[in-house]
Structures are given as C-alpha cells and as structure tokens.
Image (cartoon, rainbow, N blue to C red; front, top):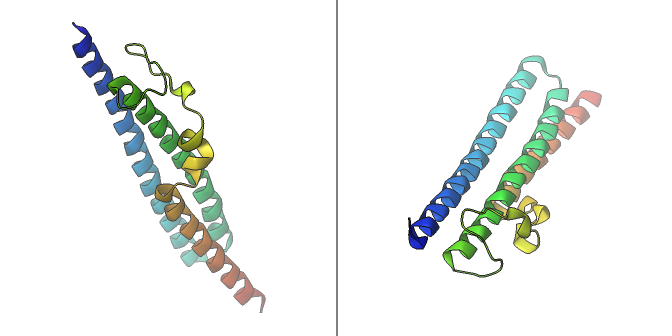
Length: 142
C-alpha cells in the first residue's frame, strides 16, 4: 500500500469513529427524551413531584455525557483536518489518533458543554422541568 492509500484509510478510520460519536450523541438525546417522558408519565399516575426532580438530575447527567461525546468528536475532527492537510496544528503519524493533543479552545469539555447543539437541548428541558416542579410544589403547599 502506498502513502496515499494509507492516508485515505487513516481518514476513513477517523471518519468512522466520528460517525460513531455522532450516533452516540443522537442516541443520548433520544434516550433523555424517552426517560423524561417516562418519568413524567409516572408523575402523572401517582402525583409524586420527586419524579420531576429525578428527571432534572437525569437530564444533567445525560448533558455531561453528550458533551463528552461532542468533545471527542471535535478532537477527532482536529485529527482528521491535520491528517488530510487542511490544517497543521499537530503532526500526526500514519494510523495515529492523538486526540490528547487537542485540548484547548473548541476542543475543551466546557466548550462542548455550552455548545449550541447541546445547550439548547438540555437547558430548556431542565428549566421546564424545574419550573413545572416548583409550580406543583407551590400548588401542593397552598
């Protein structure tokens, strides 16, 4: 195999991993919605506000997990760009996946955590569940 075939195969490997990270991220979002729906259904059947607050904790946990997968995907995109020659931030050897070299800026966890694709899914869910839980608690107290 010559160098161009090696590079093409290396890029294919990276792209396959990026696709898996993206799929995982989508499945986490779908799972979150499913679990929140189930918890709201349980709340509706027994009127225990605890299930709403469990939904908030669950959403935060999935938010962290989704941000982690997005961070990994971004790091792999950095590797892809360096291998393909689009950028030259780092030197990448054939078949190497040095994601640890991509830590700062858009590669950081916090950047992924507050990304539009993650923030605007989980934050509104948390705010709506929190508001709903507080309204139910106030209604039950009065």
